[in-house]
Image (cartoon, rainbow, N blue to C red; front, side):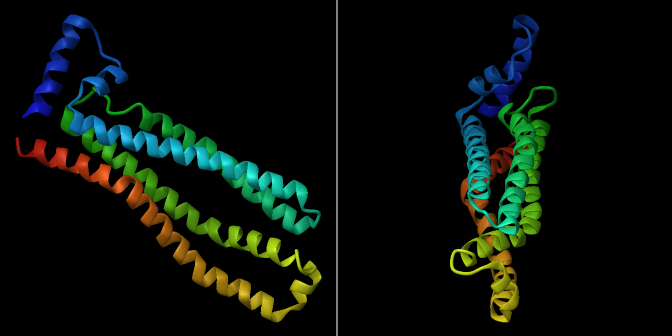
Length: 202
């Protein structure tokens, strides 16, 4: 098989040419393997850019809004995204490193696939706890453009509507996030799985 032959050749070349760095490995690897890895790396870089953008958006809104509670919620969301940036940055570095050569090709492909899948699932689970806060921040931001917070707390209808948003939009947001991850990464993770299955048949 071409992929396995390429890997074996690169391992033999290490003895005569020195250890290859990750960039060399990715460039030398078969296009069927390099393609999905490159696309996954690009997808995570885009995610990181969105995190930075939302951090500044929430900061800007928090500064502009004079209502302390509403402003505080915006700053809280900015802090969440700021924290997520550093967590995601460390994970993104590992993903951008590509497939290492410290073990066999099959093991490395499995480890890379498992790590990317784990990062995506962790992101989806953590977001479940953030959605209600984000919904509250957005709801109160919109409400206070027409009324005061005192009116919100005095309005049973408004409070029930906010709770309904939590109940309905939190699971919908979770499903949307999973769907977006599937659209962005599912095809390329499946390609890696096909390489893994092909190697396991050898």
